[in-house]
Length: 339
Ligand code: KG4
Ligand code: ZN
Image (cartoon, rainbow, N blue to C red; front, side, top):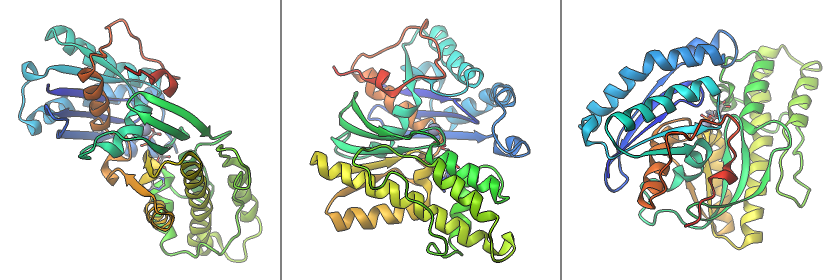
């Protein structure tokens, strides 16, 4: 079963093809970051228009790299949400049109399920029970994953998502969009102990997060800097990043231990962060837990993770109708499809 998936939930136009066994044959991404950088964030209308421009070249390139032609595709899939409505529609409608034209089934995929399952791609044991942390630009979720389609949401952010906090703090200190990779880079030259930023919700027993207090603490600190901002930036970045990573690692490990799960997974754009990856590895090793984090290329938005979910669903006969619409607010619990 050859699967082709399209992902256009935000500002990446992406397509991927998986082979019969779920291996990635091709995964192409055309990023629009340079276009949106001038505005300091993603402009929905600009994103939709550019998806339309990039869709055909990205699809053709993906098929070329995979070495397959459209009639050889057995399943067409696309992201249905969450994301920007206009952006979602471009990829979703393209995949549906291809499915219709080639008389093949269509599978609708929840973007967050793509992130959630991405660490399992190319793992010999496939999807295993674990505690999963999903940290992206719009979501911060702690999930007890008991099997494919069996997801229990244990905690989430009460305000900003972790990636959103990275992007907003970066903007505050004069770094360009998207802020996560910029803070990651600058932190390497900074001292993570230079500023004692708050670790919100860490002392609480629940599994929720909050990052808006940390963001405000950085903002207030900017008024009291002992040196010009330029000189303080690396220390500000490293201290902020340390506070985020500290909360994410400790709360994830705590949940795994309380549920008796010895596998933890971390996914989503923020899991590209180099310090987060190192800290998780070190703390999981110390706690005797196994850690799975997707390779960096699969952490930020891509269509390979969407194709992987579609491949899992198609194997179980979980096809979608062409009437199934996109949903900008699609929830992961709606992805629950125990079979
Ligand atoms: O998963 P993703 O590509 O898109 C969403 O589904 O939201 O995540 C994007 C987020 C952005 O907030 C971006 O700043 C953050 O992931 N990000 C990072 C890094 N790379 C991307 N955050 C911290 N460190 C990074 N290296
Ligand atoms: Zn994403």
